[in-house]
Image (cartoon, rainbow, N blue to C red; front, side):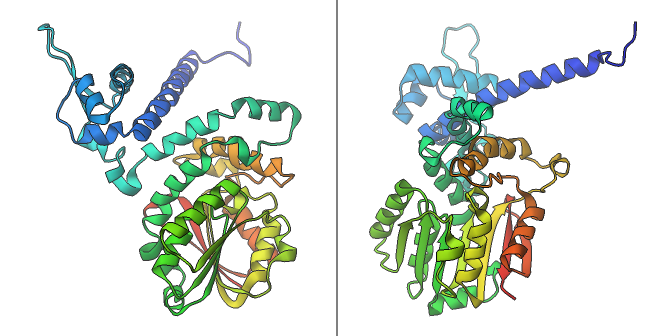
Length: 366
């Protein structure tokens, strides 16, 4: 007997296959993260086909763990396994050059291995997130043990590698001003890698970095000392009331790199940025490329990852501090709306070839 709820067997089986693929790929993300963190991909890139013991010795790692990891990499079609027939010799493993181009540190901005680390970081708070589903609230920054470490490595690809040569030129004239000497503020500076780079590159300018995390700020300060950068300072600061306590017309250039959507009160932060920016100043906001409308994100290449990151980090961290909980995928429409509400009427949005994940908003007061 037919009903309106009759199952299309072919669609059902295809969906089940997709679920199994999802499970396998999720598992491989964990192993890929381990391969990145331990340097196994970097070791394999430079080795001829080798046994698990040879690979372990070259990496300085435990052979039994390396052997099991190689098994997962082999069945995941990431590492090649060369079987030597029935002569009793051990199998040999190698990393194809085509795969190394996206998994090793030499790959630079193309190294996807860095991003797989987020899966383990996000998974570590799953119990807390489930509790939030039931009771509301959020999970604070302090619960994410490696987040700032991974985020710093991530920004090393999308920001550090192209900051001076590609990102800064998006704001016309800003490089000449930095060379001459101006006041610069970075909102949500994390471990301060971008700001420390700018401080060393433009010694006549003065730089300030704010972040909520004491751990990240301590790291940024130590890095500044290591670089002998005396023209940069870092402060652990809650920006919830930045609209009230921001210094008026103080900064020539303000930046934020994937930070505004994380804020408890992004509306107040943006209002504070408007207040703190000089009348002829520039605000450069890098933030997630996407739409505020979920159906327009169906073809986004990493939309599932971004909504997961939002649920398990960006949105929940904001909610943990009583914030708006905008989430990672607040979208360009919402970003433009909030910039306008803060007072910014002159906004230009750009994308860069190396960074499909983000938009770059070039913002002026008038």
